[in-house]
Length: 71
Image (cartoon, rainbow, N blue to C red; front, side, top):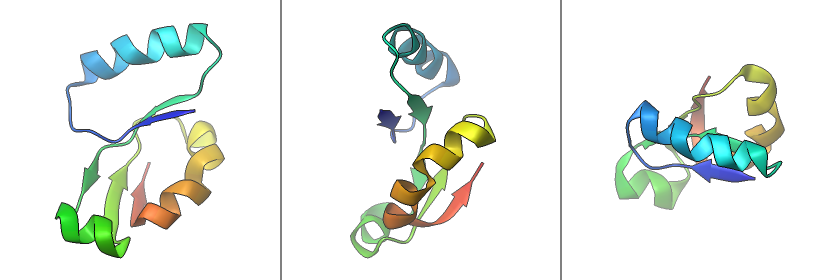
């Protein structure tokens, strides 16, 4: 499983997702908002750029990192 939590353009996320998929890895584009304090406090907003079914597979991990998960 790969969760890319950086802020980048959609084309780069797709370029990363394709080989991950070919290797059988789950890749999700999950940029965050909330500054370092949000990361320290587990209060980040996480925007998941994938389908809802794939998001549900990683939701429990994302909920540790952030308090608002947007799909």
